[in-house]
Length: 275
Length: 289
Image (cartoon, rainbow over all chains, first blue to last red; front, side, top):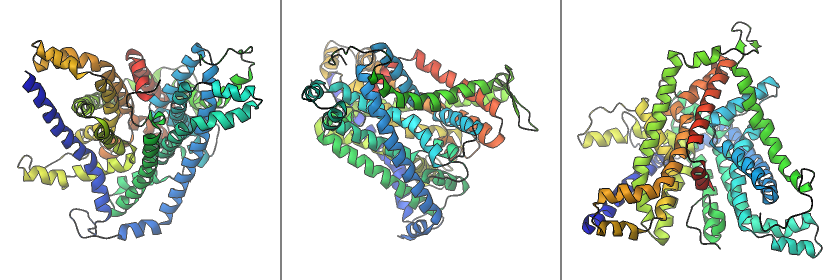
């Protein structure tokens, strides 16, 4: 019996290896094809950087990149403010109020994005608000501030308020105590929350698609449009660029998480070793 | 929380309650408001000539939702999302188990390996699958070389949507499963085996019950967003096999029938909320935090 139990790990390891290959195959394929000189992409036609220069020369790609960046930066900034204020509130709220608050936070994450985006689309149409960067940010914040809140709140719960109270006893104003004591303690969680919000916002398709209107288009929405028309080699180059940006923020978060394990709750749920 | 000393003023007038204002304001105006508006619209009707919306309390939109045409779409959507969730579970469980049996640096590396695709652009990843599953793509070449399948016809079928959803949602299944399995002490399994339980029985009577919270959390994390999925069918369905999310969106952006679109959206929300209520909410919450 024991021998059969021991053979199981080898089987699962082999299986896991296959899954890892499959997980990365589509990504590797996009990157490879972005350097593929063959226009129809049916076979390898030699190495080229032509698609990158074409994508970079495309003014639509440049405009959409800047729009995506602007949306992601604004969303991150607003989401962090909402997350920190909410976490500060939750610390002193009654258990019942917190229960309601947490429920509404999870609801914003778990409800289908299509419903949230279309509901907002309806509201903005009824109020005759012109669609653009502002409306995209409004939608992104609804969803991603919930993620940021959960991360910041989780960190806040592990902090004791003694240091903050000491600062207050020593005569610091509440604002100063917050800025000099609480905020630095929250920093790792804030960074993880910021990177997550930035990545998800930069990568968002559904909200950006419905709330961007005719004027504003983000990079992922452009990619979606290009895929649906036809498969052009340029898409691979744009796609590789988008992946590089999202991966860069992942790498930063991973490095921070490695050095400051307390902020990594969302990223890698390791067994808690804290007090 | 409990470490904070009770302050004299704790009512709604306390300045601390003002801290809730930004989040509450944003969520009420831009999350709850739209949901209420959807419910109001779903009971209204539209004049298809003038596109004027009449508000009333008609149930005709909901009648249309449950007409044969849309019921088929809803059924297909549910089947696809349930199937994809099970697919994620079947693939994710051995994967999470393999990761949980590793230690130290390897474990972290393997976990990061699962997370990297999740952080990589959603659209681009799905587009990568289009290349992979193409009739003349690498998968077709491989299967032909192995002599398994001669003419692969996979892309733009419901199967390619299912593959796409399993592929994109797999990390959300693996993480809660890993958390549950990592807590599992191998000694418990060895004890069961030493007492004469065959491996299948050890799995069914020991591993599975202990991993149940992780399984529940993973199924919620995958199944709920999969039900409203828009991007994967839009790319891998080739406009032929549409799912619920696409049908709802089409009512708003394509056909302009807001009341019917609202009824579809409210039905989807009700469905999802129902699933959430019957599932164990705590398990899902734990996996996110």
